[in-house]
Image (cartoon, rainbow, N blue to C red; front, top):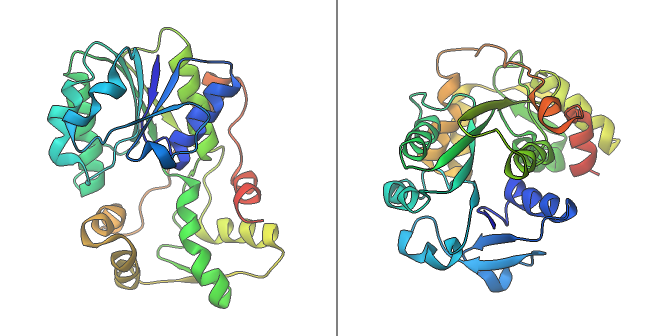
Length: 270
């Protein structure tokens, strides 16, 4: 039995769908409200932030795809992760896990807890989700402008379907225990290059304007709140970050190349 947490989100939802498409029948989804989950598998109510609520969901489970509600459930992490002992935990993490900013510090702490819990583990670390660029939608709709800091920062964003595909291969394969995989898209693109891809897909001119870090901080705080905004901007505090790495790990795990950013844009912006 495989339990998928975050099953109503982008990555967890893809994991559920791809497991079903692969013919895996023993799949269970964790949901805060099972009646609203609308998933093609059994949904069981539970909340990672409330460890005692997980007993029914974990009954008979051998493997867990763990999408952690970063920061929101960190207070409960020690007790929650203890309950995963004896299972294979595939944790959706970050390439910069353990860095000092709140989000990466959280990922690093969850990795530590999982590795010390008595569970088998595999860490899937990503540089960034392409889906994070959906935050551009309001600016594009309003005036056709995307404002981001650091126009020259090249990022190797990954399609959420590729994260899920790698996760499914790990969950259904053998020999991945104790492995850490860094998953990326097939190329590193700057924000102007990504904006150009979105513009091409929607058939409308979208302009890029470089924003100050302070301007973006205020925007992020309005959407995400101060703590999460601090985590999102943490890597940028020292100036233009280094270009993100590009790996071939998606192809190594799944047998096919990672989807391009242009493919991701076509899947989400039309």
